[in-house]
Amino acid sequence: MTEPIVRFVGIGKTYDGVTRVVDDLDLDIECGEFLTLLGPSGSGKTTTLMMLAGFEMPTSGEILLDGKPLSRVPPYKRQIGMVFQNYALFPHMTVAENIGFPLSVRGVGHDEIVRRVERALDMVQLAAFGSRRPAQLSGGQQQRIAVARALVFEPKLVLMDEPLGALDKQLRDQMQLEIRRLHRRLGVTMVYVTHDQHEALTMSDRIAVFHRGRIQQLAGPEKIYEEPTNAFVARFIGENNRFDGQLQAVDGRRCTVRIAGDALIEATLATPLAVGSRVTVSLRPERVQLASVAHTIEGIPGCCLAGTLREVIYLGDHVRARVALPGNDDFTVKRPIDEAHKLPQTGGTVNLAWVPEHCRALAREDEAV
Image (tube, rainbow, N blue to C red; front, top):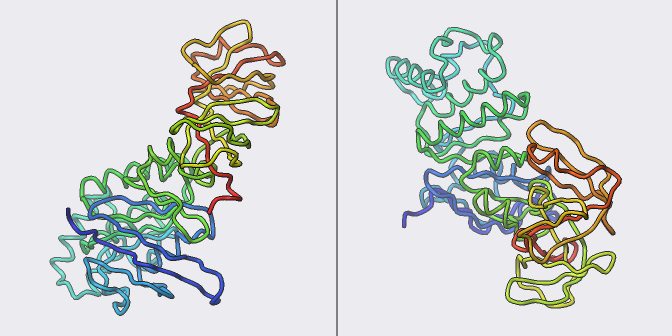
């Protein structure tokens, strides 16, 4: 097995000597992967990236690049490309000069700079734009130039700090796929910071979910979404319906939880918990089936609740139903658009059903260690 390209070993960061912005971080980044640091504002993700770039220094611990400590290596000697949210392009330079700047400061010859800049422009599909100024480009084009500049000197590692935050949604979605394709084609290691969960799920090989300076879960997008290991990850990643309750019985990973209204539901334990523990049950809206009480929901054993259908919203590719349940007046169900005609009338009583494997029982967030 190859050594990770980056290792964070016991990294801590505090600005005031009291509050730990990053708290005892251990993290290995594999060569060639696309790793996203995801979390809300103040969770420590950007500080972690800035320490790797060399713009912040750890209070404790060590960061290794290719097995060598970085503590005494200045940013410009780390062989790391950087892409910022505001692009950081020089307005007085042409596009070609902007891309070539990292090469000129490294003493690369003129002919080699021209060759590499042409190749970088081809790579981001802007070959005809070399003579323009940044102000003559759209936001998406400027972002592609910033990516080309980060890649032109063939760095070991490329860091991206919320690079698509200033773009509109359609352009942002397009750029996500372009950066992902570029990563796959070049095989360079990328570390990407965002608070946008959709962005993280779309682009990443692995996602590190940050909260209060610590990584809450580190896994691939599917596992992060389908198998959150604690209540924060379940709440932060995607939509989910939540019930608070008490663990009544445990059989392996299957469990029974008593929720509001004295109802019992079956779920899957995310981590081992004792009977009697207070838990939060998490259930994705798209995993729930819905029918009027006059119809049975076939093939869904074990889990069924009755509620009142409050609202159905048409959203093009799917419909959202809002159901009032005991202890949860805003339970959401998402169904494919071709099922819209089967939904009961609003105001009536409906049955909700799901399989226990899709329902996760997690330690209550205020009680988790």
